[in-house]
Length: 111
Length: 113
Image (cartoon, rainbow over all chains, first blue to last red; front, side, top):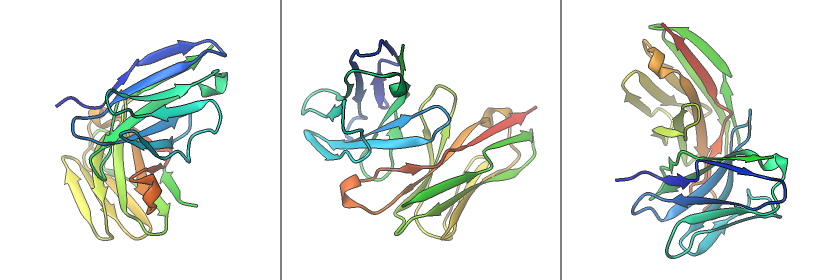
């Protein structure tokens, strides 16, 4: 049973470009969460999704960030017009209920 | 606002030297307290979930305990491979957030031979 798969593992973008991060949850898991980990900071909740629905996006910046979890395919976290401050590790977690299992993360570097 | 505070920030132990990591939390209506291990460049790895005061769970050299205000992760006779950052997180009530976690900043543990 494959774990939570995230790709790419590393992503470099120039300021102003778009970043697309993908997350395939564990088989049978219908809940997906995205977290961001800034250097020297703890993991911060961004958004909670179920298939075709955004349930809670209270932790996501209002501008430039969006997330989706379509009926088919992986969940996508999209960051438009990236800035240096977006450089961080982005983790996806999936769960069937209360226990969340994390992917290996995507490390975004904005140059 | 829910708060999770972990101490110490960093801990260096000799192999075999037992110790405890602390996680203090303030949350109204705790639904669960979680411990994760994170190695450099990797995602958090699930260790334990605790749901009510007095509960204890063990896995190899690790034992997690929970009171109404804090949780401890006890490490007995640690080995160098136990070196990692240990993260504590709480799950608060809130139907909109599902099971979203509020994390502390972690304790970075180094075990030397």
